[in-house]
Image (tube, rainbow, N blue to C red; front, side, top):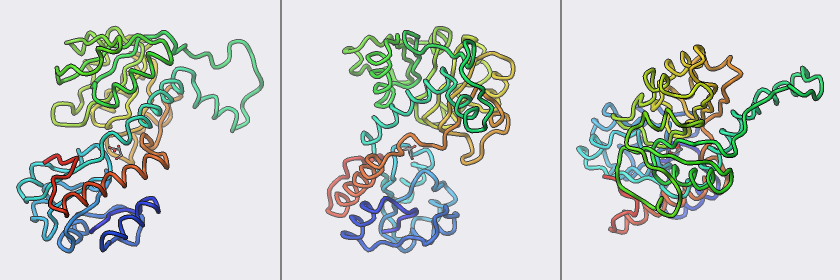
Length: 317
Ligand code: DGY
């Protein structure tokens, strides 16, 4: 079993109990040649979002490797078609990170609306000169309209928190017109993304990154948004054009942004780094002990099913 990164100790121990684990010593990411070499030697690979398993890697045929058990729900870093051509099945780890990612989304909304980054920086740098009535005035989150772009598991979990915890009106737009459990909530489904952008005080991205969602939010979409609106992205960076986001912030088309993900991680657009109206996190959505252990165990379940001759529960291809 090839494991590309160090994982929580409990997960590594569970993997080693059941498999012969080959794991690079270094904490860094593997380059394409190292990934190819690991796949040549192992029957399965357990990669993470930082491993780019594209045609340049999978086109090599996969060697011994017949399964990619991704540690994470998003699989935009894996070319699923190339994996299929190489006869390699791919699994992911849905469900287990839904609540933590939704929690972090709410934290980002509050951080941007209530200017928490700016406030914290002022305290730490000693520039805070004490309370005064007009200092760091933000905007109230409670009661505002939230527009959810992509109403999958995480989008729904965010809707639930926003509605029940913050009394927000929730609208949602989704590429898939499949109706889900929103009947139990008051989510208003809209058919046009523009309708959601025009009405929302907070726009939160929850769709996966696929060809049709790359730069889904760009110049034309920012032009539709309210001037006091903020954009939150805990999905994948490239769903939003960072170039267009920086321009929208500079031109005052929107009031702020909270980002956990970026187009070229770990590189962040320089136009974002100096802005006080954005909150920037280092891809923390699923970063709790509980969730990272659960992700590992879910990947392990998939591996065990595959090697026992059963269909893995989270098989994607
Ligand atoms: C996911 O599971 O997709 C998270 O972004 C971490 O990879």
